[in-house]
Structures are given as C-alpha cells and as structure tokens.
Length: 213
Image (cartoon, rainbow, N blue to C red; front, side, top):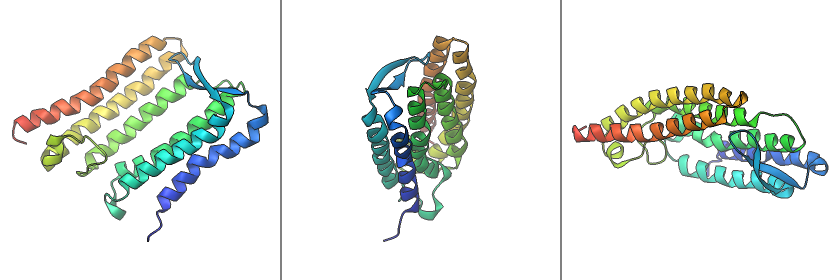
C-alpha cells in the first residue's frame, strides 16, 4: 500500500499547535476565547485544555476525512484545487490555533482583520484554480447540470473562477473597514459576496442547461 505523504504531513501540521500550547499552558487562562464578533470582541469561550489539545485533534480528524475523500481523484495528476483542499485544514490549524493562544495571553492581534483576509485569500486561490478543475464529485460546483455535461462544468467553473477571485479581493479590501470600526459594513459586504458566489454559478449553470449545454 502506497504511503500518502500529503495525508501524513498535513496531519502533523494540524497537530503542531499542541506543542505551542504545551509550552504556554501554565500561562494560559482557564478559559480561552474561541469565537469573535465582527468587531473582534470575544463572544464565546472554551476550556484551555479543549483549545490546546481538542481543537488541533478535531482539525486533524477533519483533515484526514478531507484527504481520504479527495486523494483518489486524479492520482498523481490531481488538479491544483484538489491539492489545495487537501492542505486547507492544515493551514487553518497552524494559523488560527496559535492566534487564539496568543490572544489569550493578551497579544494585540487584529483577528477581525486576519480572519476575513484569510477567507478572501482562500476564495482567490479557489477561483484561480477552479477553471482548471476537471469533473469530479468532490470539489467544485457539484450540481446535476455540471456533473452530466463536461461543457457545462467547464463554462460554469470558468465563470465561477472569475467571480470567486473578484469576491475574494473584495473581501480582503473590505476587511480593512474593520480596522476603522465599520464592522457592520464588512458584515454586509461579506454576506452579499458569499451569497453571490454561491447563487450566481448555480444560476449560470442552470441557464446553460436550459440552452442544452
């Protein structure tokens, strides 16, 4: 049986924040903020043991599920979008968990900017690789019309790719409204962009389907 190096490496990366948590454990408060509102204020907390050990382990399990479900599509010639999806949870773990730990120690980290910028970057990357992704039942705009027609899939993902890249850049730029205290402007932009990025490709695919594509 061939060893899945990506699965092993990403799983290790998911668990790396545990080492940082162990080093900082005695200095951490008993409860750590795990969720923040649009203004960057904490609004939900969890015991530090759950954050230090439980969260990385949970993300590692999610990573394993994502890798196992995607690795068989494309083999060595997997699309870049599939490869990116296989690394995404590991990136989230190695970025978000340390931020939570350092925030708990009082570090002035603008989570209200970092989080939306990270979301925007993810959409830019997905949008960039989307047009090059072949039909598959795992990643992409997986609806009946794209899965039954290669041309529908190709056109829909080319359209979605441009849309997601533009939407990602809009989210990145809009995130800096948070820095100046306009949290609700960013919230409105965020939900508007997300709804558009979900609905528009589906409607476009249906339009192509009705045209016989």
